[in-house]
Length: 259
Figure 1 (tube, rainbow, N blue to C red):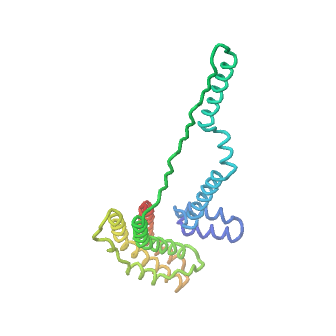
Figure 2: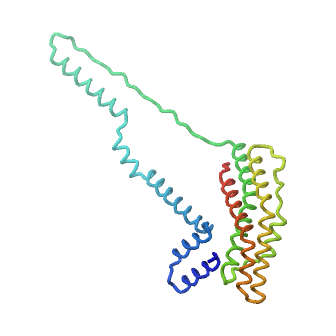
């Protein structure tokens, strides 16, 4: 049984409330072989929430007070030692009548810890701003390609129209250029140019796969012959699957660029 039939049966189970939304999403991911962008964003958001909660706990007054109580500073230990020495000298002097009165003054030691403040200069801030702008310029192309392929998958798998339009989507990919950083001036531009060239290399495959899917979708709309349309979809699957996998890897590459 092909994945389209499996997904349709899975959607029927969801519509009949036999499967929950969570169970449906898990089964859909198993069939398609990838997680939906919404799922990845949700998982990423949960991780960020846990990190933020831990950060807030570490910075809370109660946590700092507990840490301070459980970890006495070295200055407190020094002070206790000095007081003990003073008392020893005091009682020795009191008990020795043959010794002259001696006054012992302990030197006071004040240690000032240096304060380090890390601030960025205006030029450094501007450099980060420019880097992020360049990264977003390429990231937008990668994200657009990824979303188009993902929406096309959903349009041909499910009977319900998700609003995806093949013609403008194909045209958008055809109009996309990949020459923003052909003459890189720094390491960031060199890496962004590499990503653009990778994206440009898979674009013909992605567009060809979309065109085959579009033919199948038009057959379905024209005569309602789902079997005939499905046969056409199967011809486009290798191109669509290969393109989607490549774009997913490219998206991971650009996310590793830190500004």
